[in-house]
Image 1 (cartoon, rainbow, N blue to C red):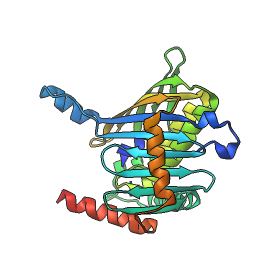
Image 2: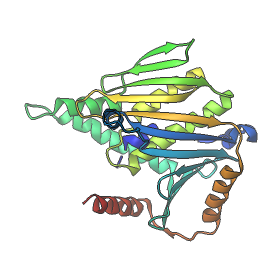
Image 3: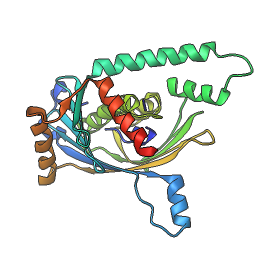
Length: 280
């Protein structure tokens, strides 16, 4: 249940911390590119195009996340300690508590560690086991360029290179990075092939220490077939009419649900059954 794609894209909220409402009102627009596919496109004389576009709106103690292609919407409510997930194409909605997300990931990480400890002998896949070990315990070496606001994290499983910007305030950085932590955890449960959240949490902690926000993130895995992805983020510190329209759309669905509500396991199964059929 995992997608490195959305793994780069990740943005918990401030109302529970008693921070000013204004600090919660901003928007992040994210585009994700597949660098290998883009290189092939350039070679063929074509313009690279993003594989994902996401608009994330922070407002009044909530985070609203909208995927541009399709009808997927996620709302994080910090006061209720939950995510609400809506799939317009399938007319389904679900809810998952952050406590359930955390406990599920702890259980998975425990099983993965047991697997590492038990696999011995000539049949073991060392490259795969090293990747699992890295995701469980990221071994990053951190390099920082204070003048250019550049950050590099090098580990045995992956390398991240970031161009950053100083946050509008410490509160803005905290809001973005706290949400990014939870988004990485949820992403692992929602998407096939997404990594465990450990590396992303380590990256966010490096940014948190500097009160920086990422403008561009390049992530390249160390293994032969691992992806090379790049995310671009744009920040707007005031919401506009289009943002408020998105918020109204989300709140209408929360308050007057039209979609069928199912538990998280059923939601996941429906999504991936449909996706598997579409690929046949």
